[in-house]
Every structure is written in structure tokens, then in C-alpha cells.
Amino acid sequence: MHFLGGGITWLQPLRVSLSLGSRLGRVAAGSLCRFSDAFLTCVFLSVRGLAPAALKLDLEQKLFGQHLATEVILKALTGFKNNKNPKKPLTLSLHGWAGTGKNFVSQIVAENLHPKGLKSNFVHLFVSTLHFPHEQKIKLYQEQLQKWIRGNVSACASSVFIFDEMDKLHPGIIDAIKPFLDYYEQVDGVSYCKAIFIFLSNAGGDLITKTALDFWRAGRKREDIQLKDLEPVLSVGVFNNKHSGLWRSGLIDRNLIDYFVPFLPLEYKHVKMCVRAEMRARGAAVDEDIVTRVAEEMTFFPKDEKIYSDKGCKTVQSRLDFH
Ligand SMILES: Nc1ncnc2c1ncn2[C@@H]1O[C@H](COP(=O)(O)OP(=O)(O)OP(=O)(O)O)[C@@H](O)[C@H]1O
Image 1 (spheres, rainbow, N blue to C red):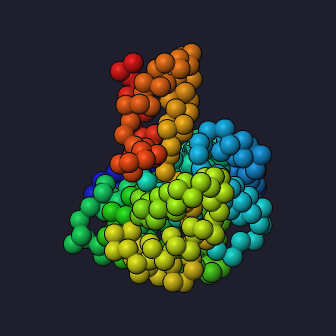
Image 2 (cartoon, protein in one colour):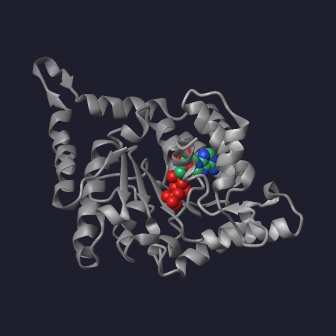
Image 3 (cartoon, helix red, strand yellow):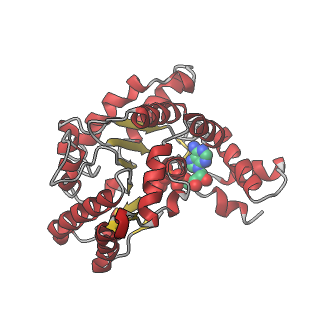
């Protein structure tokens, strides 16, 4: 992933991106155009598009217990990438408890769009507490954010921007990018229609858990939870939550968020699946005794029923180191 550095230095890559423009199309003698590698890579990726079958396989095999997120993300990305002439950028808002797979899915999406995935120059990560820590600098952050996004979309139209920790973002910062997410063909000569914006947030996790718990208590299957049971509750809940990063946000009341994607809290069996996946990723044989021991070290809620892991699969990797 293309991380931004802290403070003033994080404008540095923007200058690189903006200056890219002058390197893109130098007309040489005989009208031969010379393009930068980055530009050619971007064009190649845009033409190549998305392989929906590969994304589907990745999500189905790697992401556990998230039937709604799998369905929505697949539908959203496939539809968006198949559309030769989108009217606005794709915006996804991912919500759920810690460790339920929001960053993990962003990584899978990034890899399916840009082969270098999180390390690609066209995938940009903003982390609220790292990049926008000071409340008194909101105006500055808004300007920097606009410049950063404008610069990078000018260099590659199909750039991906991921905003992590939205619930820790000072209210209002995100509205600075509202014009880029709207139905405009161009803003100041730049088209944002092929870009993808992904917002990650713990906000709404309580609402999602409540719905999951209601289903469980009513003896209904987790897989029976449908998007319509959650999406409206989420958008209203996030809009009214002062600590969601989207509090009273123009992005919501102008309907600029295309999909609210709920991540369900993970159960004991999903934690075990995460332990097995991690063992395989380390090239080790799956040892069911260790799988059970790691899963049993996790803590589960609510207090009485103990159904959902309170950290999802988040500490699985570090716990496995002790076994
Ligand atoms: N649903 C899942 N399926 C498979 N693996 C998962 C899932 N959820 C989490 N993991 C594993 O746990 C790790 C941590 O999860 P991740 O960082 O995606 O959580 P998150 O939802 O973004 O949490 P936070 O809100 O705290 O940032 C992932 O890298 C992945 O290995």
C-alpha cells in the first residue's frame, strides 16, 4: 500500500505525481511519444480491468463468515469495472467490529485491481490518527487531501483511496472530497469517475452485532441476514453518530456512498478458520490441538452466551507465535 508519511512531508509524493504529467507525453522528433512506466502501467491496468471470477474465488476462499460483504463487494466492483462510462467514482463504506476483515478485504480488492496490491503506487492509504491527528489543522488537512487526490487521479484515473479509522476522523474532514465523489464529469479538468474510495470504520459495529444477535437468539441462521436488514440502519446510524467520521456528512445526505458494507462479528468457528489459514500461510501443517487452544484463548461476548470474538481474528497471528 502506498502509505503517506506524517506532517508536511506527506505532500512530497503529490509533487512527484503532479510532475508526472510533464513526463507523460514528451513528443520526440518524428512524433514518437514517450510515456513514463507508471503511466503505462496505469493504462494497462485500466484496459485489463477486473477478473470477477478471481475476485470471487479470493473472497470465498479467504474471507470467513462474511457472506454479506462478499456479495456486496463482488457485485459493486464487478458492476463498476464493467461500466465503460461510470457517472461517479465507486464509494464503499465498510463497517464492523475490530478484526472482522475490513482491512483484509481492502487488501484483497487492491490486489485484484492492481497486481502490486497494497504496495502499488495507485493504491493510497490514509489512517486518521496518523495523517490527520490534530483537530486545529482541519483546514490544512482538507486542502492537502484535495491536492493529494487530485494529483494522484490526474496521474492514474483508476486510483484506489482507502481511509482507515474513519470513526477517529474529525467531523468535516471527509466532506472536503465531496466534489470528487459527486456526479460530475470533471472537476477543474480532472475526471474522478474511475477512481475507487473505500472507507473503513468501527462505527455501526454495535448495530450490526445487535442484528446478528437477534437472528441468533431467534434461532435463525447467520446466512439468512440480508443486506436490507442492515444497510438502512447503518447509513442512518453512521450519519447520526458524532464519532463515525461521516457525522451529518454531505456524502450520506447527497447519497454519494454507493454501498454500506456490513461486517458481521466473528464466531468461535470463524476464529478457528483464521488460525488454520494462518498456519497454512506459514507453511506449517494444521494442528487441530493448537487451533483449538488459540481459539479458546480469545474472549467472546455477550457475557452469557459468549458467541462473538471481541477482537475478531485480530490477535490470532500473535497468539499463534506462542504455540
Ligand atoms: N473475516 C475474516 N476472514 C479471514 N481472516 C480474517 C477475517 N477477519 C480478520 N481476519 C484476519 O485478521 C487480520 C486482522 O483483520 P483486519 O485488519 O482485516 O480487521 P479490521 O476489521 O480491519 O479491524 P479494525 O477495525 O480493528 O481495523 C487480517 O489480516 C486477517 O488475517
